[in-house]
Image 1: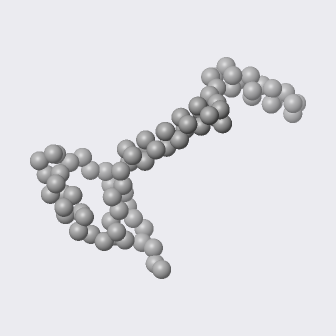
Image 2: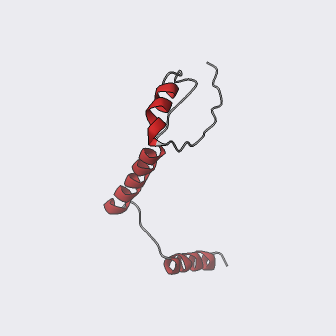
Image 3: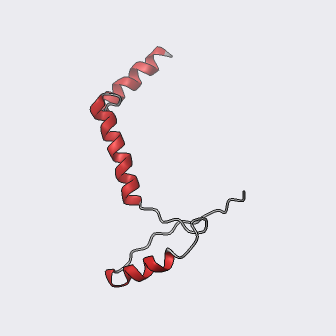
Length: 78
């Protein structure tokens, strides 16, 4: 199976022509044109990150915490 390299573009479309543009691009084959909703993808990613934080699987560090972690790590190898 041959895979074609797809290029990504971002369109900002006026409401007055939105339906016409969508109608046109939906006529193309999925192999040739993929419509990606970046907002939904980003929302899904951020929700996953939030879930990780809330479940305790991930934690946040401020710059002072990070500095302390790095200092401890460096001191072990000096």
